[in-house]
Image 1 (cartoon, one colour):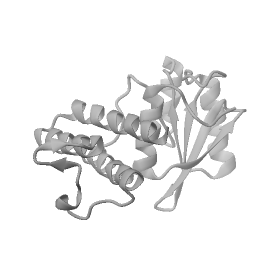
Image 2 (cartoon, rainbow, N blue to C red; image 1 turned 60 degrees about the horizontal axis):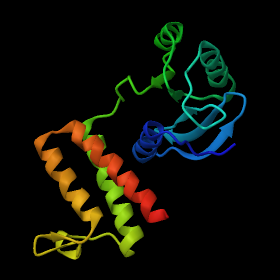
Image 3 (cartoon, rainbow, N blue to C red; image 1 turned 180 degrees about the vertical axis):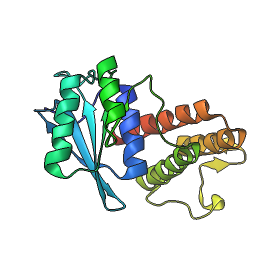
Image 4 (cartoon, rainbow, N blue to C red; image 1 turned 45 degrees about the vertical axis):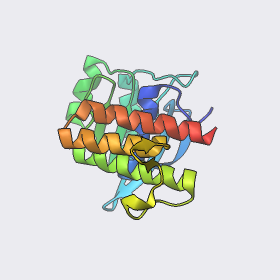
Length: 191
């Protein structure tokens, strides 16, 4: 089984969590039917489980999934597990509420990050893309040649400037679209 997801919501959320929390080393866990990524923050071991079906599409977070997740916490000395799934059942939501070590994200549950963290992620991804495209990240605005005489010759620079404006205007929904556009640009650069 691949360790890549195909759903845009999961791709975007995984990339954001990787940027914010340093999740890495994706591996497929056949028992839990998910892709697992790990990180260590402030001496705490955290796992993100991306719930997928056999076609690498999002799947629901069932009670059985949560029971296996609790077993993992107890057996592996894990401090926190974040589950990304299509949805969860009412019984599943009750288990999540009762278990401090488990968090859950679905397309209908708002993610638990601050706007400042989204802005940081956009800035970090922008610098990564500059390094990919130009071989280095600009140290100051004038180092970037992607904007000359008011004309953009670089999509990365345009998206960066757009995101800066959207942050100043506090347009959070548009910032999420900026993040998605950066990820799409990254995929296109890789091709």
